[in-house]
Image 1 (tube, rainbow, N blue to C red):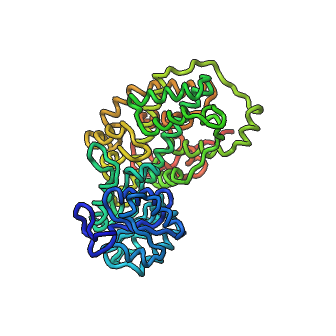
Image 2 (image 1 turned 120 degrees about the vertical axis):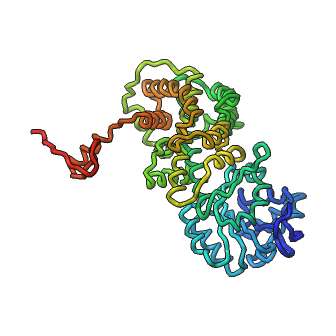
Image 3 (image 1 turned 45 degrees about the horizontal axis):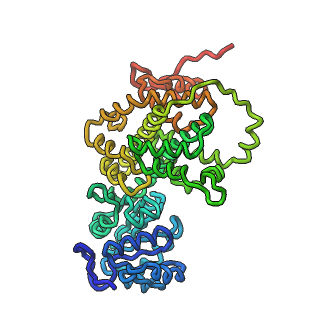
Length: 482
């Protein structure tokens, strides 16, 4: 069992495990094994106590670094002080209940870590409630799925400096590594880590949707099959689109259903699920007055997908109104997807910047880019470029205005225009790619059309407006039509 000292010279005191993991579901089990694999001793427990013994049995040689406890009191007692206890349980009420149950068993300096997909407002509330108790609370976003959790995830940590000092040696050991640099960082206090993970998931929604739209254009307008499209996506891994999601998409398209011998994607019902983090990103963006229309389009598309029965009814009833247009060239599809992905990420980072200002987090956008380079779902070659851009000349603090990003967009926006136009003419929906282009065209135009919005608002509601050349609030002299 435990020696009472954390690997690499940590500060655990007395006999006991280096860390406790409560929750032996998919992610909790994987993280516990990852910790043990990296030399740490781990106490584990679970609400359903009958999960504990099978987990230890299946751990194989790693079981010598693991100990199980059915009773919460025994679990806490098995961890060396000051304790680090990682909750991998469903977010919301279960976390609140767990905190209340475990608090009486803890000592000053102990740290509770919520590694689930929590609403950052809950994390901020929990941090505030534990203020002054001597206990510390960490909200930690974990990305990478089961494989990432087991072999090295990307982790976004929010909490006190004390809790980070205590957890850092373990976090850096178990995190994904990019060229020797751990993909984990302490991003700020209270809810900073969970908020960054939320926006990560929003960007993930947009990225997945854009890839899906290219697939749909090739399938529905180009008549191409899964294998042909899969081979194209696999080839794109050699260029600027190299990313985990492109890799996953290629592999999915090239996978075969053992029951039918046909491509796996062709036997899957076209209704997409969602756990809510994309919506959370969108809601918080709107609260802060930020545009996230690529993420909104992706969330909306998943919602539309659920209306399968309506779509089946509508197909023979609604006129197509399509026009003749050539299918975009492969090079255009690649560049259009590149432009869309840059814009989707730029919107996500803009949300992070607004939240950092509102909540006083001082988020480091370059470091966030770096911890996303390995382990997480949105890892891609572009993130290195984003990190460099944030550390260089950045007019207005906006990613798309960095010199390197302007160059990328100069090369790719014409292709995005052609692809979006082709989709519209051919009757293939491209909601996220179209949203990206609309946002880009809005941002690049110094004089927009909101003056007309203000005129309308003042006409029917006397809301007032600002004049171009004068300070103050004014009303127009409006003449109703006869």
